[in-house]
Each structure stands twice: as structure tokens, then as C-alpha cells.
Image (cartoon, rainbow, N blue to C red):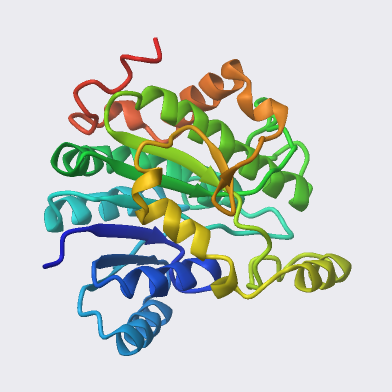
Length: 293
């Protein structure tokens, strides 16, 4: 009997696709979140054929668009009573500054603000799993970036450097994870950041040629690095691990700035305002936020 539900963003390529394939082999429900319908359907059919798992659900969402994120959350709430594991994996790198329909810089919106909002909107379903099964897990796929976000220019309107902006969003993933874990203490929901290592994918296809060559030479096929992520998502020994930065199944130290409590709180407050999260009622676990005060 199918008992668990995994939700993976960015599930049509790279690490996300490899993770979806690995998790589909468990026979549990895997929700593939994709931006492109054709690519999503192709990956869904491919994974279904390779695993014979009938419990593959494709959902479309553009994480850079607030209304699309909210729509996905509503669909998932209507289809599932609980979510056991949410894996925020989707990411984008752009060589030139682009803005979303909401007016946000594209990398900021896709890599941070969208996952921030989606995670908060799905806390109710994660809490349902924690109450039924003892735990639920949030895994944020990121990197050990040292780039500090410029809170006076989060949309990179004054200055745009693609690698710095991308790096800042990875630091935001860390800040968000640590603040989230603290807010979710004693709820049964864990939150951890994961550094998977370099994977061969199209993520850095718009980077300069030397960077693309370096990344390719230093990276491994996605399927070779997902094992430790799957363990963090499924293994009993990770059921109570929270607020950690993991690499290959072990805790590593994040850059010092990621542990700055004031930066964590400031990013949360700004993200809450920009995503209009505070206007959404009834999405949080009963004891959410009590332990961090």
C-alpha cells in the first residue's frame, strides 16, 4: 500500500530527475513539479516506464510567479491529506538580469522566494504527516555559498553580477533553512539544507565558457550523487535531524554568515512581505513559531 508522498521541485532534469527516479523505485507517490508541461510529461512517462510505479503525479508550477506557487499549493491540498517529504530542488542561473511578472529579479524569485512561499503554504500537509507518522521532512538543495545578500538591493536593480546574484540566492537557502528549522522545533517537521556537490546539468549553461568547462570537469552525473539525498529523505536515522547542512549524509559547517540570526530573521521578514504570506490564513501548524520567540 502506498503510504508516503514526496514532492520534488525541478523534477525534469539534473538532480531533480535523478531523485524522482530513485524515489519512484520505492513505489511511493512522487509528485513531480515542473514548469514545462511537455518536458514534465516526458519525464513522467520515462520514470513510469523504468520503475513501473503508477503513483507518479505531474504538477505544473512556475516558482518565479507568486500566483503559480499559490495555485500549486491549493492543488496539492485538494489532492493529498499529507506530504511526507518536500524537496526544494529547482534552481536557475541567468547571465543577464530578468524580472518576473511580479517584478522580482528572476533568480531571487525562483531560487528563494518561490520555495520560501511554497514551503510555508505546504506546512499544514507536512504537519499532518508529522502527526500521523511521527515526522515530516523538508530538504533544501543548495550550496556552501559565501555571498551575502544585499538587503538594500535584493532585486539587483543597482548592480547585477550573475554569479554574485546566484550565490546570494544559495546563501538565502541556508538562512531560510536554519530559521525555518528553529521555527519548526517540536512540530515533528525537520528542515535541512543539502549540498549535493556539482552535478552535470544545464543549470550553468548561461555562465561564461571557462566556468562551464570547469563545472563540467568537476561534476558527476546526477544519478551518482543522489544516494545521500534519498537517505536524508527516507532513512529513519534522519527522522529527527534538523537545522543541519548536510553533504554526503554528514553534517558540514555552513559559511559563518549563514548562522547570523539577525540575517535569518531579516530575510524571513522581507520574504514574508514580498510573498504576501501574512495574508494567508490557516496554513501553519498550531505550535508553529512558538519555540523561536
